[in-house]
Length: 207
Image (tube, rainbow, N blue to C red):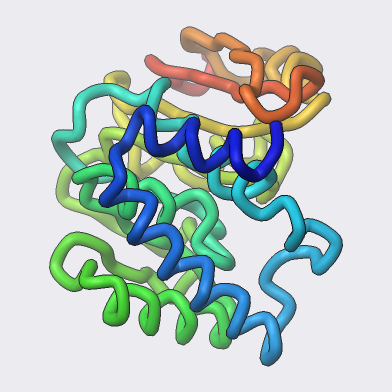
């Protein structure tokens, strides 16, 4: 997928307004790269495909935008900030690293997301909610069994887990099934045919 194709992919699904907001986000991200290493410098030339479409594609696997979307290990805002900019979801960005938290809060203010996007400056194990998340996402955070264990306290049987896992998606699902039961599917990434996205629901610890 070329950068022009990536822009078109997002525009066709999310509208021109999403493109404008994502362009602003890209400017903030590139500027911040001069202060901290948010993404691999080698991926800057393919940022729209490698990072923005790779994040935005999760919207096509998500339920309707009611409830809260919790994004674990948001880092540069991927995928959580992209989800918020390309949709109406209320998103919680969970990120323990201080400099990244500062960047995410800056983006929220600059991009007009105050009131709809929040930052939890902690590890996911310490986050608490009165109601379960509607969606939980994480991109390159931890192996699937450990990832589920760290966040299952924020989920119920209706929570949808959207977890990009690259070429290891199928093997990580097989590993997770030893400890966790539920409905697990692997969807092919639109960016990389060799990469998979784990889509799970009704997740509970195996008895």
